[in-house]
Image (cartoon, rainbow, N blue to C red; front, side):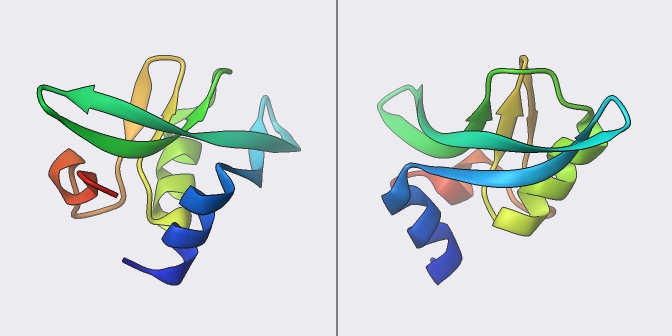
Length: 86
């Protein structure tokens, strides 16, 4: 596990600059644990709409999955199994 990912998980949130409706805004993403069967995985959650390309950019930059308004993006080449037990 990278130091960056561990730092984000231990703090419980991170503020990231994203583009929403053509404007740059700093949004607060919180760490959320998603239960799948008996296991759970960690993701960053934003309770607002964010375009898929921005979700993917944030996932790739942070190294964690990101969810916003029922859409989820994983870092390239990774899936939920890679984040189980963090």
